[in-house]
Length: 125
Image (spheres, rainbow, N blue to C red):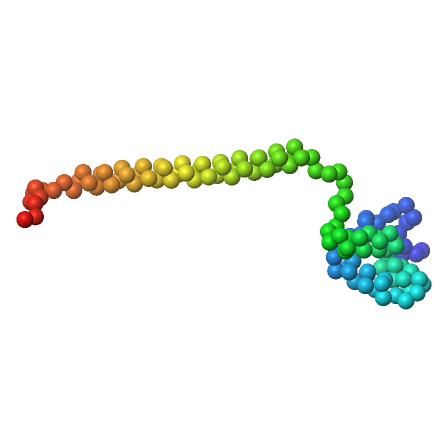
């Protein structure tokens, strides 16, 4: 029996880091003949179409995004929800500050009423 997986089982898609892509691209581009380039592809388990995509990504400077473009309304909704959450946190902080200031005011009034002067103050002459 061989140690290879059954023919019906497929591996998950491989993901390459930016460093892996750069390394494989440089090896591929340094290869002098088509046979050497094919050897690089086989050794890394990639297809020539990936090399083309990676070259395009390198020249564009960004990786192309896959899937549907984002819904502008959903993006706006997310932004608004984040702003609402930020404003709620700010409101809670302000309310706690007002409560603390009210308690401090009450305490100062209590201290002021307890320390009434026993003698009337004389005016400085």
